[in-house]
Image (cartoon, rainbow, N blue to C red; front, side):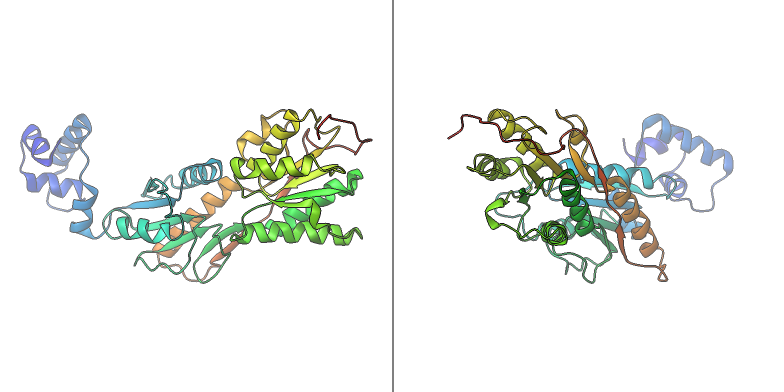
Amino acid sequence: MTINDVARMAGVSVATVSKVINGRYGVAVSTSARVQEVIDQLGYESSLVARSLRSRRTNVIGILVAEFEPFSTEILKGTSSAIHGSGYELLAYSGGGRAGSNVGWERRYLSRLSGTLIDGAILVTPTVMEADPGIPVVAVDPHLGPTGMPTIDSDNAHGAIRATEHLLDLGHRRIGFLGGRADLESARLREEGYRTALAGAGIEVDPALMRVGGYRPETAEGPARELLTMPERPTAIFAANDLSAIQVLEVARELGLRVPEDVSVVGFDNIPESAVVEPSLTTVSQPLQRMGAEAITLLLDLMRGVTDRETHVRLPTRLLVRGSTGAPRAPRATGVA
């Protein structure tokens, strides 16, 4: 449907339809009502690009992600709930994750969308922070941590301390660590929390019990298997995110190990999948949906010119104890070489 179709069916000029769409004066109330009725009947929407060329605004906020996976999906849920009543719409965008193009994806996406399709943007886990698209931008959990750009994140270090302390309180002393990616600040902070908790308990960190899981099931599978097939395997594993922890559960099952009887497992994030695996996963809950909502609030403040507010928001994490953790028991043979 085009604006010409609306004008023809309403029996008015295209200029009149344009005035109604853009809320300008000079149209009788009865005429405006008739035009709006036709617009609703036809399902007409003006082009975002055309709208931006006329008013330099689209009333659209872009949520830009490298890919749609459980973490970013939860962030999106939070942004969707927070946008109601603001007068803005949401555009969720991913460029498809082309091979070899992961670093700097936010620059490409912002260049493509800013100025014509979106008035502001939320970047979910951006790899760089020096993008200057000419529109307000908020970063959620950036790879390098907070810098000059307005940022929303959670208390990764404290969450990791609580996860490790939980295992220590249960009586575990050989606690494996399945870390994230070396280029991510969140991964560094979660390892720091693991080390801090062990040091607080007077336990020396054993590098043999530490592996890099990479935050993905496919990259965590091998390191998880290495930890679980050690001659003196850990009695518990803290994985730096839920996807890695769930992979630990899968490997343990393949090896004939019982969770938590033979090995306890803790994750981080509290993605929906963590509650439905068997056994349900003990995890550190990041308030992912709240992070998305806070990002919307901060971005709207920036777009409205609000200056007297904090532009780095760090939200608390909390431990959720479920079925994957318990007190250590005597080692049981598995038949694994």
